[in-house]
Length: 264
Image (cartoon, rainbow, N blue to C red):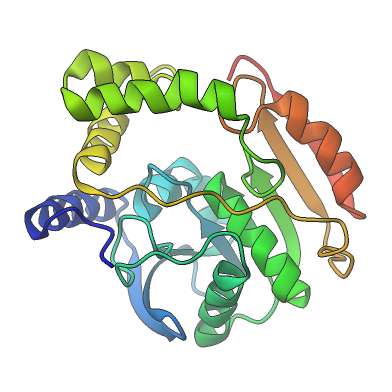
């Protein structure tokens, strides 16, 4: 099943995606095969630099997320795949978020790119994908940075419904700029016009992913020996730092640091 609501909507999203890629400057693009279908990958940074893999969040795209961490490309050859089930140029279908499908998918991507074991950075949903990889193939990870991570706790249901789901439903019923701002301010504040336009287009034309990666267990991660950095935001509607930080202190055997981004 396609993630897009219509062929016209898919064309709008992909045109936006291509503009975001063009804004990055010099970026290579590759398509690699996985057991779940083709995956599109953006690549930037010096060709002789060590590799690093970036996995974007939901309500965002790989090129937009890549630009937010572009200084990494001064030191690494950065590979940013389009996560399946999210807007981009990978196969347009959902993967089950609660089993090991996403771990197997990104494992296939790493193998197809012949990267070996690599450091990984995951933003929100992308961090949850990294934790599925850690459960499936922990030896593929040499270090992990998890930013406002999914896959650590379950989103708190009442705040998520009251603060996020209801405003989203109101926007879907009657799309207005003010209603969209009400939603996007929960994801980023201050709101940039580019971010507002991207999230609005995704809400309008994409069937949002059915659920989040489930919380990892300590038993699943027993073989993960790579150091892990966790950055959590105190005002995150999905994964608030007050709940994330205590659990990662218990979850990871090799936690390098767990820090709170305040007023965020």
